[in-house]
Amino acid sequence: MDRLSVNLCGLQIDNPVIPASGTFGYGYEFAEIYDINMLGTFSFKGTTKDPRFGNPTPRIAECTAGMINSVGLQNPGVENVISQELPKMKEVFSKKVMANVSGFSIEDYAYTCQRLDQCDEVGWLEVNISCPNVHGGGMSFGTDPKAAAAVTKAVKAVTKKPVIIKLTPNVADIVPIAKACEDAGADGISLINTLLGMRIDLKTKKPVVANKMGGFSGPAVFPIALRMVYQVYEAVKVPVVGMGGVSSAADVIEMMLAGATAVEVGAVNLTEPRVCKIIIDELPETMDRYGIKNLKDIIGGAHNG
Image (cartoon, rainbow, N blue to C red):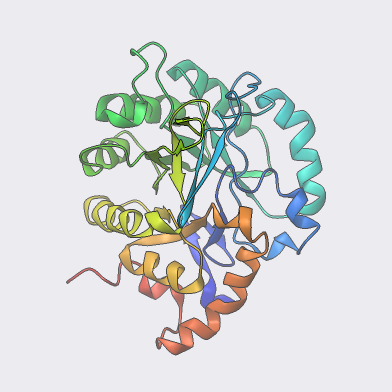
């Protein structure tokens, strides 16, 4: 369906709907529910250089209109992803996939991206810079324009694939960070990652999540994500991938009007595993309702001039 098709960093995708990293695994559980080849693509589970067991449990807390997670980037490590997960994924998904990469040092990021650069299945590298920099006092790479640029530069040096830098919203101003990544060579910007939140159990009078705090996501964060996508679109020339609380075809259109070329769907996959199929199926009708002929024509449409 050409009217849904968009170009993301030089690669044409059938529609802008992309399940977000950490909510879709490597796709094969969802492939049992619907044909995941209908997706634009999907961003697979955050991958690090070494295997990670993740954070202590409990890791999840429910909230009104959202959830808090503190999974801690549990994953089998890049070598196992390449040797075990990608061949399995290939059996159920024939399109290029987005590889989500995390790291705790610039060297970590560069190593993992260099390894994934050699995988034909991978179309884009989505680099999550919300991780703590173990050599920089534990501060997240994504909170400092210089650190964000340094990661971007290091990754761009080891790959020919498009690099999309995923930003944290837990900053005073996201725009200088987006610009620093663009100036360092990023091919795209994705945002937002989760907001920092917590819940307290009234019975135990202690935080619900073992790590005390975690990433808050779900429909409640949508207006914040939309605002940040709008701001970043005004500041950069590279494509923007919008995410944060998206749960309907109308949300996808709203994100695109704010400036998103493609839209990731996260937390709602966990409560309604068919949500991305539902959104794609409903997009043409929703577009008709608002007089939209082609999705690519509305990107950034809410901006003046």
